Length: 146
Picture 1 (tube, helix red, strand yellow):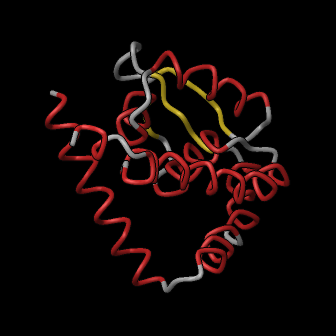
Picture 2 (tube, rainbow, N blue to C red; picture 1 turned 45 degrees about the vertical axis):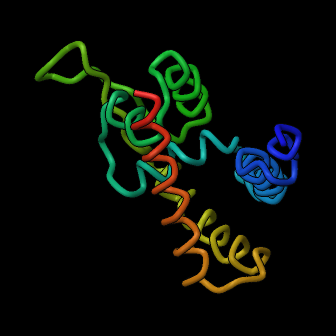
């Protein structure tokens, strides 16, 4: 009976893991054309949603620690997409702002979501439902781990 519980094809974690790899393979050529890695793309999307965010705020949204985020931000700054400045109100906080190149990159990146939708061979509504279910699962797992 215990053997029945240990079948790879039945693991939700493996389904998510392998789907993530497939998604990354799909994104890679599009992001290479933008000179971005996937984590850098997520930072840029976060900033396109609202410019002038703190490192901590971006980290919370992306579930990334500051120690992981800081080198990534330095690379984005070196590429000319963002600038980092100390907050005038609180010197401990670093604000991340888009440069004109970072703002312009959004127009090029706008082609990516439709490509993902097309490759998924599903509808936007079905993907939205799936995303909602995955977010619910993530929240339950995070709550359980805490």
